[in-house]
Image 1 (cartoon, one colour):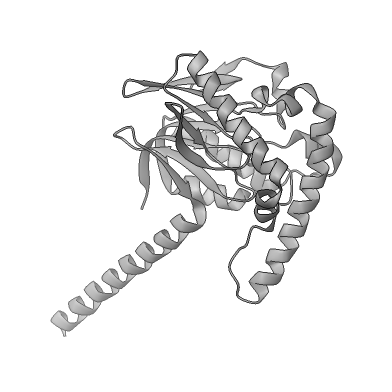
Image 2 (cartoon, one colour):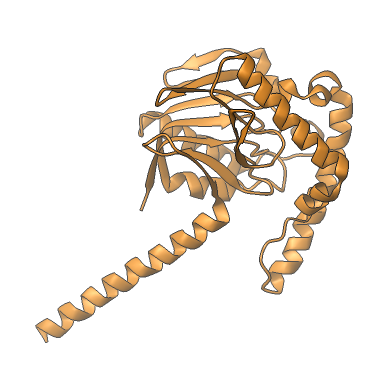
Length: 272
């Protein structure tokens, strides 16, 4: 059972780090189709790959699936570079058929225009003080390492996933202030560009809200929140969380199997 959308936006996969949920994003995309797939930055974590990251088969499998979207599903795929995959600046702009790599994109749909960008270009720390951003990335990597081991412990005891890193970030006042400033700044960017809304990633905080008349959308990430933005065939935007989708998917699959089993039982009884 596949769900079809007009547009799917995912960002911040950070392929190359241990905390990246490559298997989950692959499963999600296998069960969804769309006319346009936007990979909104930090898909590959070039920073970590230079230090201690490792490229695995499942990371390659993700890109094979993306190419399958292009070739077999006739889907337009737009890859927007982020700060962690800024090595893509060397080849920008790039286009091959329905696949392109850019810095930003104007998404026009149902009479509205959205400015789509990863967001780091408008973050003064990552854009102007990259050495500070990389220093902070080391601390964040440690937090994700701690989060991974803590959830392994919880899983062994039958407890649900708990984002320790998200809780820590939400309790640090400076981090909360940064998120608010970032969102307000991006809303201003959309207004300056005469757009109805803005779609970004970067801060790993999924969002769907109005800010001073601008529709602010953030696709979240696939390290902590495991979220995606989807646009339905009527032009409405929604945030989809992988864990919520998986529960519903598993439920539907079980119900479908029960229906098949019941049909088989009825057929056997009639033939007996």
